[in-house]
Image 1: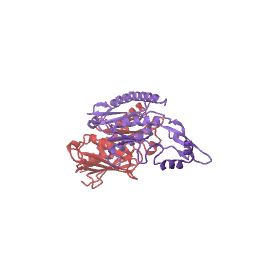
Image 2: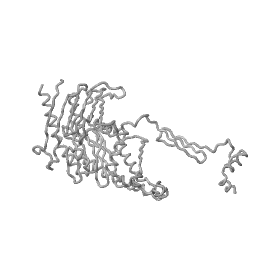
Image 3: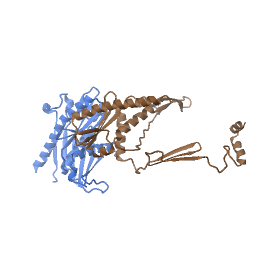
Image 4: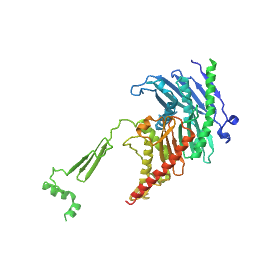
Length: 235
Length: 248
């Protein structure tokens, strides 16, 4: 199917569904997602969060090199290309995080001795980059038809010096924050799949951020569902 | 008197011996000093040898590496350590400044893994912390007239370590069981891993969970309390060792 579907959704802190009543800082930025926009990869998606935009392409299940093949499940590979410059050690560590998150949800045992490659290209970075990469990867995996046991989403939150929580921070908010936490949550039970944090914070603040992220993930999953419904209901 | 002559005219002193076909330490011209060699003394290296030639001593350890850039595991671990250093603010970068705008200390931290059996992040963080505590920087003063740095090796001071980050790693099995300090085999079989880096005030510098099966908030809380206990154990151990080292 070569149709391009553009789904747009404005998600703001509507009817206070579970997000902590802390004021305007709790809203997520404007989301947008476009699927099936590249012709070569088996699946592709472009995810926008505010001004941050990431393009993802998925190839697979495909032929795998004998040195890399695993006898009972698919080999997952993630390549992250920064906007400028060559990929460095920071990209390698992010690739590892995204790869492990995908491995936890992708049903690799259905396609043994194959490889599934996820290529992510950063188009623009305006804060919450890792969360945006996770969302784009998930949408691309769905577009490629890779079997998964759950969907996952990435949510970032920043803690500034007086302890206020800001969800989906912009780059300015990230720079001024005392700590930035990024979580990947699964869609079935909102369990924590991946976490990557920067900065100092206390135990209670971690629990607060986790709760806020779980509430925000509901919005993201609803957006996934709506955009997929819209796409498949056209045909 | 011979000693005086040796200081004033070392070459002449030497020539006197060479004329007689011998050397000041009594050896013939073609004679070697006593050589001793000790092979295989380092059990963790693939090959090792210690050689003594008179007073010159050299030790060599050979570890077989795969050639090329450090593997992905090493890159990820080094990024993790760099994040821990920055997040925990273990030392103030300003403390390393000798003269603002002119001279500053650069610390290179090389971590070499001699043996891998799981839980490398915990070991690396502990090794880094202990090594930084052990660092002694000599005092450096800038001579105003020559504008060169003068290093005073006799006066050394320790680095000011502000916090003590300690890492605790867990492995998750089948989404429910949590074990602390996984070995290499356990890491391979586990469905997920989690590393918590805490400092003494109970603040977290890093919560590193690279994917793997999901964890609920309550499980996370258990891990947190285990990390707090571990921090106390590690800090006590380190303080004991440093105290026993000091009177050197």
